[in-house]
Length: 177
Image 1: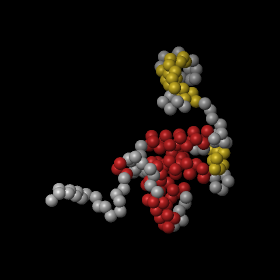
Image 2 (image 1 turned 30 degrees about the vertical axis):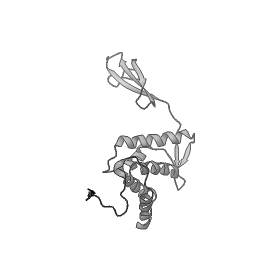
Image 3 (image 1 turned 180 degrees about the vertical axis):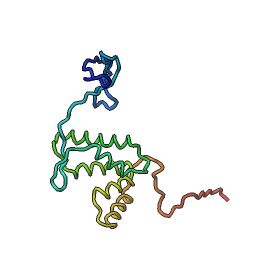
Image 4 (image 1 turned 45 degrees about the horizontal axis):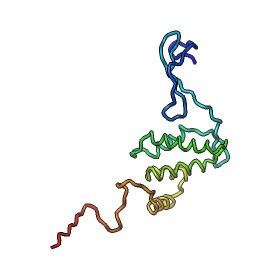
């Protein structure tokens, strides 16, 4: 490993530990020439994973491209970019866990939409509008109606919907008079 400061190939490992995600080993090294310290990561080199597009083209799985699409869908939403990165990690790990060298783009898109729907309904509809290439407002309406008719299960209290006809902001007390 070459020192990023002086370019010498001689260094010693000062400390080794798993990275935060457990996907790599983090090594602190010290250059034997200039005595400066630097960090390296050692990862298992996974075989290439290809995505087969609708038209039959094959592209290597592109994490930044998937994350970019999620960030666009989640723009101005209260979703932490780190949560979206975790989603990309989950999807990539699940795909690689299937031990396939090629996966259909449809599978990747469905995995994204399934997770995104649970995370944020607006980001889900935005992503779906691009992924499904809505041809008109009617197709978008059908997706919106499906989201409203079958909301994702949440334990989050702020997401509870009021029964039809119930108005918010009114307080009614029966004092027995």
